[in-house]
Length: 320
Ligand code: TXA
Ligand code: MG
Image (cartoon, rainbow, N blue to C red; front, side, top):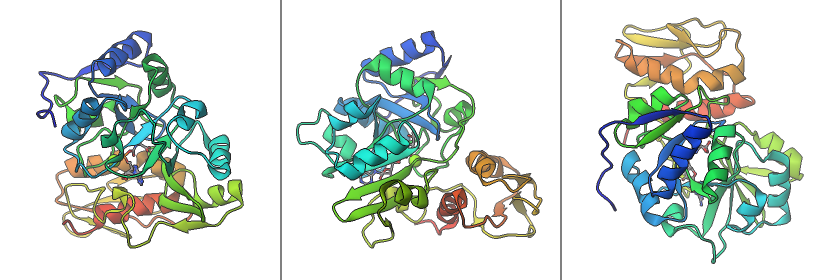
């Protein structure tokens, strides 16, 4: 493991040709750079270079057993890394480019550094839709490993300033592409011989996966922790958080939704897409408010609300 990354400052560049070229040069030199995707900002490095990947773990302070998602430009690049059965092909056709990560058997001859998979025989792959990430993949001409661009266990970043708050001086560069459109990490689904298992709920719902494949979708609630995103307190703000609050208690910062008005709101009209896009920014604002505790209004357990509640339950879980 290289020593913890330490830079005198973190350069911010625009998501234009010059910015992408600068970021690609750093990636080719083995550095991780932060880049917007349609879900959250990612911390991207050359997935074929073990020490570049190690710098991701170092910058995030991430437990080394957490495997990373590999981002590719297209399905051909994905098929060079993993074995696609007909179900996996159908999912890629239906949802790529977009916020769906497929967990598939890794090809033994794949060029990806073993550290990316953290010892697993499967690989998590996603073909992202965001133009800045797509331009970076094209400029680098190789798969990019990219977890969310935040210190391990903290709130995922949806703006360049969230990235700088969490990883400033620990990474050399962030591409500023504005706020991300979706605001929630990708859906992760394992394609198994017996069907699909949802490892992390996200923007692509279980219903949509079932509809595209005609297969039942098992929920990832087995005893084995298959994705560390399932660890009880993975998505944690610094302060205690109370769920299903309809009014604030003393010293609480209330994040509202729909009719529940608070110090802040995920969506005044009660729109779950708007709420998902606002979620992590609202948690960041709550963390930096003067109140010592956070409360969140009830969110309906339907559609994107399932993924939002998954994140909120983890954020509220007791700390290890
Ligand atoms: O939207 C996203 O997916 C964002 C953007 C940047 O693409 N990335 C992201 O990555 O959320 P990360 O590293 O924060 O989350 C990756 C999740 C982790 O829970 C990890 O354990 C799981 O994917 N994962 C990776 N490889 C896996 C594998 N082979 N089997 C099961 N889970 C895996
Ligand atoms: Mg993360």
